[in-house]
Amino acid sequence: MQYVLTEKQDATGIITLDHAEKRNALSEALVGEIIAALETFRTQGTRAVILRAQPGIKVWSAGHDVNELPAGGRDPLGWNDPLRILIRSIQESPIPVIGLIEGSVWGGACEVAMACDILVATPDATFAITPAKLGVPYNLGGLMTLVNMIPLPIVKEMLFTAQPLPADQAFNLGIINYIKAADEIGPFVMAMAERIGHNSPLSISVMKDALRLLSSAHAVTPDLFERIQGMRRIVYDSEDYQEGIRAFREKRRPRFPGK
Ligand code: YXS
Image 1: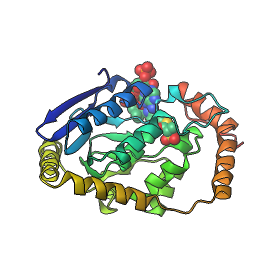
Image 2: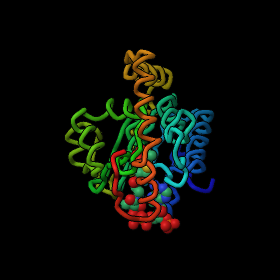
Image 3: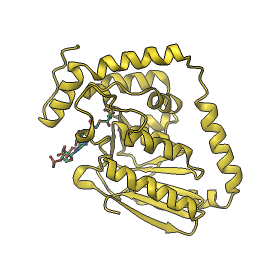
């Protein structure tokens, strides 16, 4: 493991993002290590998993590794994209995943946080959903994750402005379960994980999967799906998309032509 640390404390597994020099960007390699750790914890009979970054971190994760986004002409968030595979791994894991959030969370990492079953954050935590900053058309499943966790007007504001949502507002909206000071959050989350571990893993895993199926049960006809995919293709084939990626690499504000 090069980009994450793993630790097992009794029936609780801890996965710590540990690639600070790249702000824990969700590269294929880092994502692969998280997925492998989730699977290992499942085979070890772990009862709860804590997904966190290093204590005191300023950036929990900077989101999708922009350098791994396609140059254009291909869906940047297709089914087999590492971010999409990670989201499904968290949501389909039979083990409850508690997101312990410190620092700022960006882009697809916000969806990773929202895919966790329970969120506990420090007061400095912020959540910024940024596809519009890059000219990326977020994918249908990803929007579903967000809409299931965040009230629609707030999702729209976050997507359209790409501005960070502070932890206190996220808590008031019920997006995160608790706000805890940096020196309390570790023991608090561990105690919650232990409480989960005392309950029936079979009951919990079935209820977790039932809730996932219920929350994603929306009638999307083939025509509707293809219409949305066609609209998304216009975006990822656009000059906006090219400009968003270019501006990120040139470390400047993008100037979107809107075409
Ligand atoms: O220049 P070096 O090699 O030192 O690397 C720099 C950054 O390039 C790198 N880095 C990233 N590399 C790939 N993908 C990223 N998302 C990413 N973010 C950062 O990490 C090194 C340190 O970055 P630096 O100097 O900017 O750090 P900072 O502390 O001054 O600023 C931290 C951030 C997070 C505010 C800043 O790095 C930033 O704004 N990062 C991009 C956040 C973002 O827009 N993420 C969305 C990625 S795209 C995505 O998630 C989805 C596809 S979508 O767009 O649909 O949501």
